[in-house]
Image 1: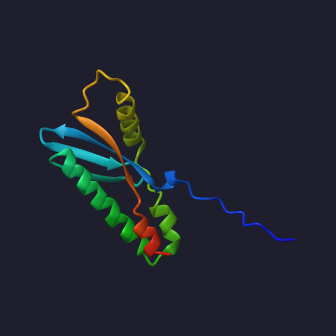
Image 2: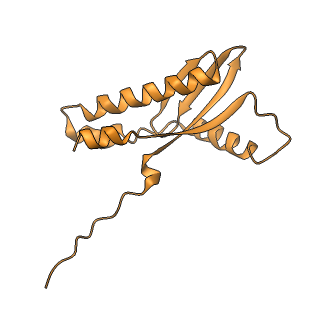
Image 3: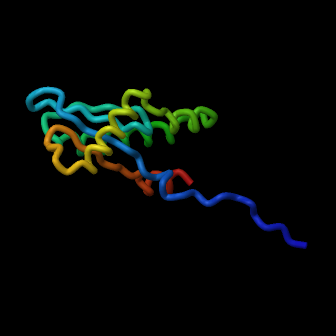
Length: 121
């Protein structure tokens, strides 16, 4: 009798990283990727998005390039402190309330580049 492979498929949610950005001062924005505990500062929301993508890509490339294979799972699951998760979900809730102005904060998603997964197989 043949045995079937009993592996679980990786859901697409594993490739999605939750992030937020908020204005902390005039022309000063702060952003956090809550899944990897990475933070950036920028002078505009657009610059913040670009910087966050660069930081995430650089971090993942560094992690996958490590010689210590045992540390990779830990480095890929560096969740931000609870405060940042609360801020993220507060912003997410504000998106559902139409009368709250959204010019001082935003949430966004980044995706783990498939190129990194493919290159490291």
